[in-house]
Amino acid sequence: MQLTSIPSQVLAAFGLAPNAELVDMPGGHINDTFLVGGAFVIQRINRFVFPHPEHIMENMVGVTSFLREKLLARGGNPERELLQVVPAQNGASFVRDDAGDFWRCTRYIPDAVSYETPDSPAMLREAGRAFGDFQALLNGYPADTLHEIIPDFHNTPARIRQLEEAAAADSKGRLAQVEPEMEFALSRRKQAGLLMDLLGQGKLPLRVTHNDTKMSNILFDPASKLAVCVIDLDTVMPGLAAFDFGDSIRAGASSAAEDETDLSRVHFDLELYRAYTQGFLSTAGAALTSTELDTLPDGAWAMTYEVGIRFLADYLNGDVYFRTAHPQHNLDRARNQFHLVKQMEEHREKMGRIVAECTA
Image 1: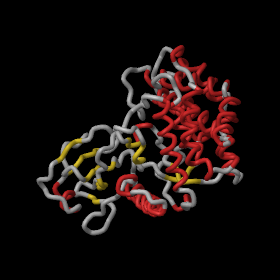
Image 2: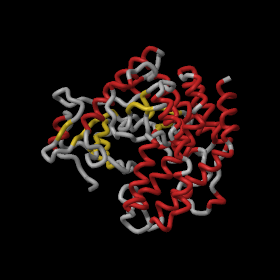
Image 3: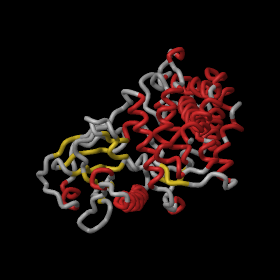
């Protein structure tokens, strides 16, 4: 349930006045978020999506402390370029109220806005630069010390098993409607395991990854359109560089929304792919291994395929995870993503050449 206020005990725990001005910030879909006194952002962490909020905060404090030192070392401004956790009066990184809910406080970053979609290739390039910089700055952080906030979040073979379980159960009697989609998904099982196989073989390093690299998770200066700060660190956890790169490409390099039903309007745009890749590698390139660079296009493919099979599994399960506007919504999304997957397969060689050009 969406909250409209903050319990007084939470405000007091963070040392804020009970009559402080509250402004609802409705942009997010998971946590309840308020601007308090024009200077602090207080959020109630959704315990149903994130059953261990304390793990989120432990990860967040560790990563932001590390980033702060890196920014200072290069002459940056952590006050503006970094989410800053404001501790409670007792020194803890969160407050738990009488209802058992977890609350956190960060400093508000003024004169910065987020955008749902880029308005130009240049803006997408800047988004790539920001997420690449996030990756580069965290190079060297011991990723294996972080909590896995959502187990197997980008373990594509595990997602395939979830799809097969949904098909076997067929709890809503929808399996007969999706035979072509199931065939498409399962015929790519071997390719889908590439990144996890390379990780298991030690050929790809485990890194600190953001895991939700959509456009709206970057704050921009509205005048210059330059990136200011990467936000929403709830899903920061161990992962692969290809995950973050690929998730941005999945959404950023498509010509249409992910639920567009007219597939003739859905195109994988190589120029948008090039723009993001240029930005990402301008900052992250030097930190990545040759195998990581070679498999960035595979990350774009895998993240698009993975989201497609998640949509399909949710459709078979009766739409229990993703919000839907109509009964076919998740199936439409799956078909849309699979259409992009096929186009990425056709352009795989070109995608690899663009990475090589941007690296050179």
